[in-house]
Image 1: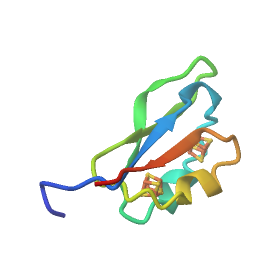
Image 2: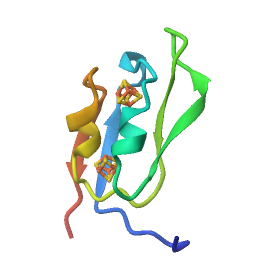
Image 3: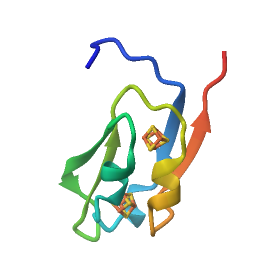
Image 4: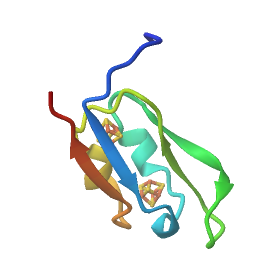
Length: 75
Ligand code: SF4
Ligand code: SF4
């Protein structure tokens, strides 16, 4: 995995809606989502974004709890 990774997309993660199912982590093609060590108010770990997001929206499509908003970066 290259050390310097360009991000072509970014996410807003509504961590308080997350139920910790980890479907998004498995669904992310570049594998840039990682579960937190901290927990939200419901007691669930939630995903955190590492550099290298492509903006593909796979996480948004798979998440049953509408946690993600995906933004494509331009330029
Ligand atoms: S938009 Fe795609 S690349 Fe970015 S975190 Fe979600 S699944 Fe991964
Ligand atoms: S798919 Fe949604 S509910 Fe499941 S861990 Fe990811 S963000 Fe949380």
